[in-house]
Length: 74
Image (cartoon, rainbow, N blue to C red):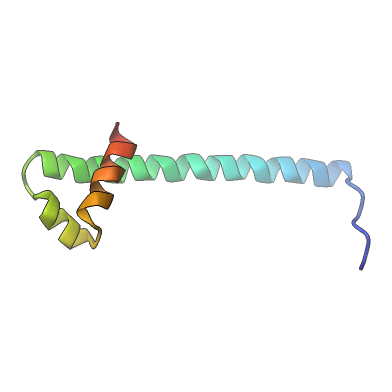
C-alpha cells in the first residue's frame, strides 16, 4: 500500500474550499425543502387539496407529508 502524502498548503486549502462548497450545498438543499414543503402546506391550508389527495398525487404517505410540513415550515 502506498503511504499517504503529507498535507501540503495547497491540499489543506483545497479541503477547506470543498468543506465550504459542501456547506453551501447543504444550505441550498435546506432552502429548497423549505420552499417545496411550504408550497405543499399552502395548498392544503387553502383547501385546494386534501392531505389525502396531496399524498396520492405526490406519491408520499399522509404521515410523511405531515412530518415534512411540520419539519420545514415550523
